[in-house]
Length: 274
Image 1 (cartoon, rainbow, N blue to C red):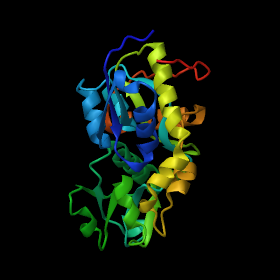
Image 2 (image 1 turned 30 degrees about the vertical axis):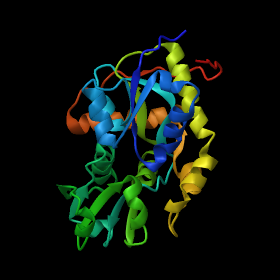
Image 3 (image 1 turned 45 degrees about the vertical axis):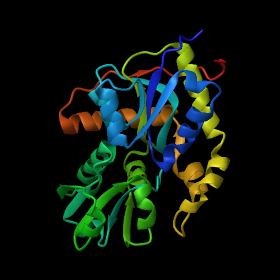
Image 4 (image 1 turned 180 degrees about the horizontal axis):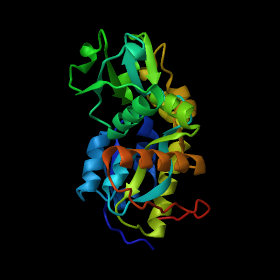
């Protein structure tokens, strides 16, 4: 039986992770062993790297910052083509862009754009950090990489929108993993199974989550389509292949040593009651 240690779990506070949040809040008796903290992707990663959190949904690029990363869930934030909420927004086509503002909330999207710039578009840009006023700076030859819920009102404003998940798949033929559930140490098998079933509860509640958040729908953004077609939550073999390729490219870009990643995935046939 699982020791009732209080595990601190950090989850990204975006629409795409609401199914995880739902499951981790609603799973029976889960409050006995979990403290849930909601942050943006970069903050989740920093919390895990600094040892303030036991498990976190972190941007894929930050996995390499851990000495002994364990991917502990067969669910992730991924895409098989168009992801919708990780895009380059511009008023001019890509070949005319000179400057790009990079979203400071996710290092994965920043690294992904830099890899695509070099290998797919074969262009060089002047890069600038984002600020609260970044959207007003998208003009002329300046574009911006924007992620998450803040992209939703932008689809009707800009003529040129480049979806980074879609471009990655065009370049590599593989899906992309934007974020994964990671622990810096191995976890008890029973805990991994319980965590899996909590996330599974959220996955099975997507229709309810869509109803509860219907106010986000716009002419260009449909939440049900987003959950069921744009976001691909299963960390299957092709996504693991895409993730490993991306991390190899990030390690080259940053001149980092690639970490040995352990996939401590659950046996989904075993259901453990708390």
